[in-house]
Length: 113
Length: 234
Image 1 (cartoon, each protein chain N blue to C red):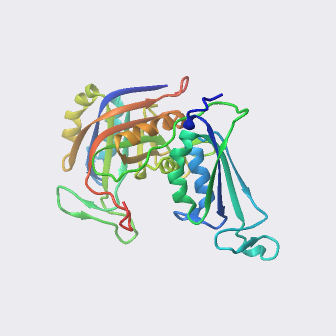
Image 2 (cartoon, rainbow over the protein chains, first blue to last red; image 1 turned 135 degrees about the horizontal axis):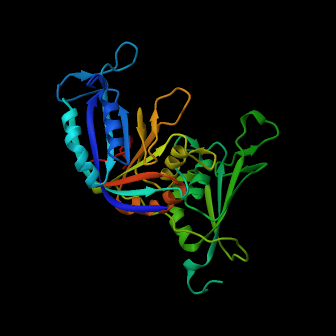
Image 3 (cartoon, each protein chain N blue to C red; image 1 turned 90 degrees about the horizontal axis):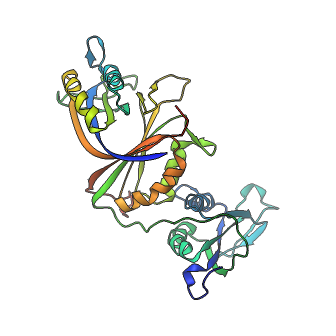
């Protein structure tokens, strides 16, 4: 089944080592999203980058980037997104949050999930 | 079956001749052509390998003596409507390289099923375009192969300007299950990003509808500043 609707796409640029109350920030964000009923949220790791702190994060000796740049992409309709945003903005201490309007196409298998 | 005075309504039988070792973008040309036809939903196509033959270079390609250096003639045959053939031919011409394409009028006496629309020509990319993000799971499959691989092949067959596949560290889709990095699971979230004109992306969507059973697609506006191939050819 296919449905189409307008939605919002939020991208949070954070660091892999960022923490929130002792737990990895990206994990906290995902859980917050799930609790808020957000449709789709995923975390991607960059291999190099720099952000608000201007420190360049790049691969170290073992080929693994220390505090690698992460992007969390969140997709939701306008209402749940508006409800979620204040919490996310409070959680991201140093980073960037960007939002864009999207047209969403959902595919669902009938009888699945 | 069709009006005889409308040439685009009658059928064409197209035969493509290439050598087995012809390459197109790093892979065998005949497989690239075959996939191109498949993803453009040509009603049917058959690839046959000849026993022996020669082409424009007048060199004899044969299997019996120099079996180790096989470069046999390959023939790909398909039947399409006149309009569909018109749409496919420019790209086929590019793909055959030194090969040959022969088009003959044909009358389809009997055929099962229907047919679908074909592709559009690819203009250079500049200005207002669409960014399409396709969210699927790593373990989803389509006709025996990973769905994300099939999607990239189908995007290329439809001449979309480019596609990049990202594998997430963790995430969940609208099924609600959390996917975490696990060495054996191979069930991470996959995102494929594609940029092209709105018309090209919308023309591709019917095929996407067919391929994605479960997933999410987000379209947003972007402005293309530059799009060039390494050789400078747009």
